[in-house]
Length: 372
Length: 146
Ligand code: SF4
Ligand code: SF4
Image (tube, rainbow over all chains, first blue to last red):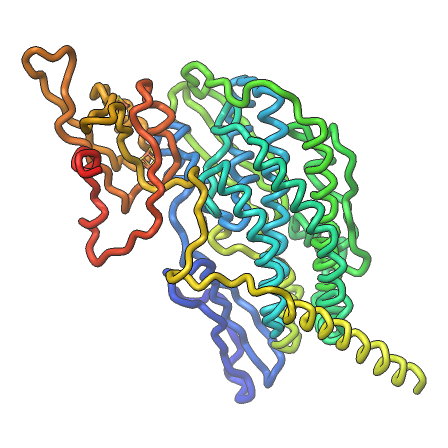
């Protein structure tokens, strides 16, 4: 794929540098063409599409339940909220009611998934900065979540657990015990992360005042999630437009001040603490009852409908146009990482290449979600 | 100048604290599992490829009545179900039930739609092969071999 940007390579000091892609069989294939002046990046051109799988078209080519497995395969790190957005969209469109217990289970599993996603994001970010150890600690904790979720969903990563009208399987005492044990354990681990990473002088030097995104810039590009909140804007769909049963829980929206990479990292750490609070409250209030009421044959009425959820990376919107059949006429997915990536050029122009890696890592991009 | 030295001090301290974390992990018990020599028990609920459930302990019998709903509902078109009429038997008798695991996305729609609860996920997770055909499973044969 050729780059569209006109680079200034006439100047004999300028040269082009290719960042990525790795092999297409790996996840996350992003190619960024950099125009370098020595160690400074003067031009940046991200090239997308290596992982394009026509997800939207696939949604339009089969009956609506057929898209369930696809939802978990866009953001493979935080698949649960992607499941959630799609089933909630169908529920809104067809007026399907969801048992309360199922809504609680959705919140619990989504928040667990958010923590596991942030753990991976943080681990991989520090790995990008050259420290190998923290990702192993993060994976250690993440393993507890994956084990618990595996037991009820059957998968470790690409979940296909939610259904329009509930969830496919009830949670049991083992899951609740495991989740409570995880919460307790993880609370003691967060100070350890602070010792190991957050307060580390090298980490601070490499992230503080690097890749500053001002609130105005974040708004202009439609940044979402921790990237937006890192710039000081407390916008979270779970609060501003509460879906499911999020309005019943007490939690805060952590924000940053400067909008630099360190702030975005800190927002993620604090968000994990808030997720623990949500899970704890949800487990305490968990009502009894059925978890799945299979809806009668759902036809997608002519007309359109959209639904937004807050994924680990920000706002995700599904937009669907129905034509009276069971197959969506049009399905559009607005993913968070795409708008977050679009910040890259303005954020990183004129930066040292080492800082560019740091700033780009702090966006916590998941490429298959951008390419989808 | 004093800022310079205080930064050296706080920075050095932060590095030592970080090393302390590493050191504590160093003396903790080993958590790495030496797969494949050692194995962890997997959850019985994991989703392997689908299989027919044996409904009778003595012979290889299943409950499938060849309604074809699983094949129809599969979003990946990976199930093939065929049956035929046999004398003296009510309804159809299953003759072919294959699943192309290379295409399966483990969504669980087939297991959920089966009104006779004749399907379930197996716990097979150690699958590797050189050809695609190795993953085209014949579930009737599999049931008989069990
Ligand atoms: S849905 Fe069940 S009964 Fe019908 S063909 Fe499939 S396995 Fe057999
Ligand atoms: S799990 Fe899903 S994709 Fe796999 S065979 Fe069943 S219906 Fe098809």
